[in-house]
Structure formats: structure tokens, C-alpha cells
Image (cartoon, rainbow, N blue to C red; front, side, top):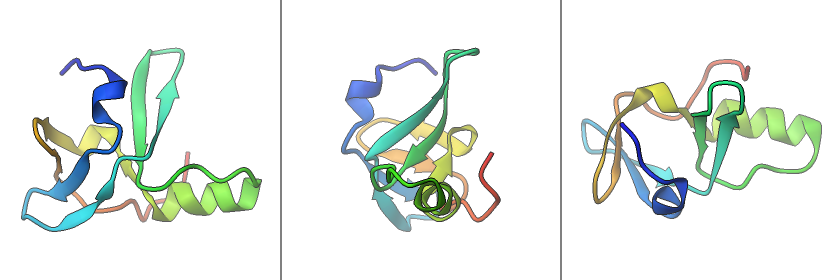
Length: 84
């Protein structure tokens, strides 16, 4: 799936079961692969500890994105795994 990041900003994110997760506010991009690795549902904070917490609690792994049309549909909810 290829799309411009600018199209994804502000899109609503829902699980495939219909639960609203949040709105796409920021993205983590792996510059080596050129791919998005995470979608954040709030802007990434500046502080290291706050950023780690946001990645843990307020982000979605991009590999869980099922489709992108009028909304972003994911297969799982907000990340609860440790940040990479």
C-alpha cells in the first residue's frame, strides 16, 4: 500500500471491529527502509520519558494497518508493547 503521509494526517483511526482509536497526529518513519513504522494518535512529546510513554500508549504499529480510505482501519488497538 502506497500513499502520501500528508493524506493521512488528521484521519480517524478505527479498529476492524469499529472501535474509534483516535486521530493520526504524527508518524515515525524508518529512514533506512523508507517506510512508516508507527502512527501516533497525539504529537510526539519532546522529553525522552514522555516520548517513550507516548510510543507505548498512544501509537499504532503501521504493520497493523488493514486499509486506508476515508478512515484508517487497523487490526489491533493502541500499542501496549514496549517502544522500539
